[in-house]
Image (cartoon, rainbow, N blue to C red; front, side, top):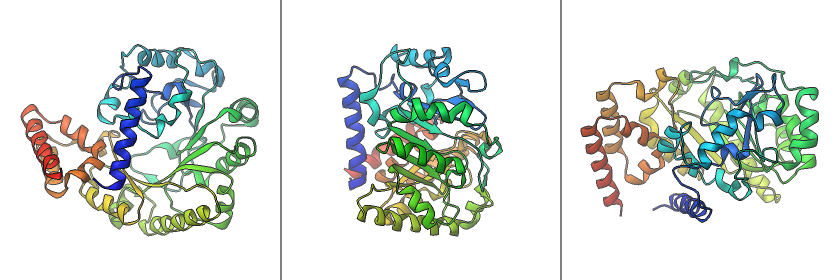
Length: 371
């Protein structure tokens, strides 16, 4: 087992131990509705990025953030986890096991195990506007409005009541590094809560400037996630319309250099990860994607496109899905398959009983040969 795989395995095992020590069910609990709030460009309020923009718990045009945070919808969601009767997130827990994500569960010690929360969220996912320089085929965030969040409906309240208590901030909507709201948020939060940890997801389709680096020096990073989706120029341009892979490669290299500069100056690592969303156009690239990351000593983040369905592998026929899985099993060893677990699981589960049994047997054989 390679060093990064061993680290991930041990982190997950530690998360499971943490769950057990707190009497939590690993198949029936997730901390996200107790810790996180997602603010969307149109005022919608969500909780979980795995559920996407369609699963909302309220809207700031109709209620205050405090009202939404303890509103009926999110309270019902919390109750499912407190009672171990999971409905909303049953497929995500089964296929993605996202409730056991070690990164998310770093906040587990701060969870208030109550349907009604006495404090505001400790994590903010700030999708303030949808502005983006690309038009990705699987994304519609760039169609969302800009300019909803004003001093009156957000900033004044957040500066006083929300920002001081945040442990983490997550930004991913549109292209954060091209949005003025991002830089305002960095200035506001870093001045009153410098210990807050930041995760920013970016398409890296721009030039990393000295001005940007100076601003980023104000914050402590948990992760910088760069979305690529393909290592082939034509495939990248098809998936990420208006984009050129060359630009992203260059900016990734610039971020790697900047990370070195930060650490030499006593600042946090960027903890760079590269995200590949597996879909119809790029499923053949998984092995190359993982190798690309290993060659640069960064972590691959291989995820699966469920929606829109027209881009998902689950939209293919049974025979086509089986052919793809056989191709993966013939091309990858068990260690590589394990890194693509979020892709393998939904594909295997989509098969008929006989085909599923065959694939599980092949995977077990690969696992035994890797021991």
